Length: 274
Image (cartoon, rainbow, N blue to C red; front, side):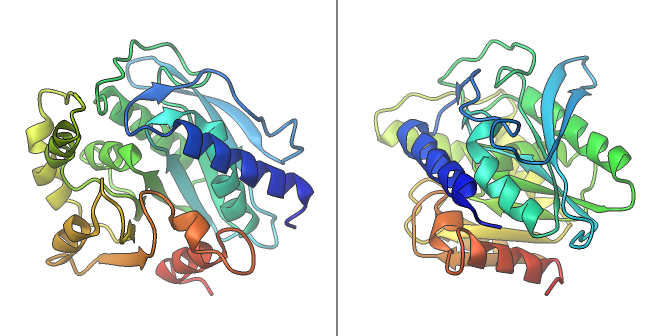
């Protein structure tokens, strides 16, 4: 299962992430790899948002014998495009999950969108995620459908779920307060901006009722473990997995038998799979 192609894919994903991830909006329109080239089984789709934006999407389907009847809609972080996250998506697909990936507007080959790299996020990305979620629900109606989000993608998840309710949320590097994150950047002499309604974010997050699994790095300086633990305190439906690493390193740190093996086990346990 974990052949040379997959190992190369994993190395490429790590290299992209480490070289470009800057905790700011930095989209790439070029795919460093595509499933066709890597001979990965998938479906290519186009998703139309409520404001008529066209989003590129890849769906990785599990083997029928392993199918867990569970869809993960993948909301990635603030840089690159969906090709940077192929290792994570294909790993979970090989373990029986249906994984729906998509590019936000202005990213990858989705419709163009003017992006200021000093913005931490745009509310329009929440419209994109909502469209991807509804696409997944309609395409695979017999599945439980949740969100699997990373860093900025967790902000988008919080905002988008004010208009629909997923069955669950898996968050990695979950942003508890964009305002505090902006202050952290400012303290490092970096100027970043937030949408006008960002101050309402924490109230929106507090209203989420669905089960949540949050991966939290003990050395994460951006989405700190202290903030995650504070959020969990009065949320019995929130489970936190700590790991000894920094921002978004959980998939690579939580590895044993194969890349991401312990990470996958935590997700399986959360969703009541062996």
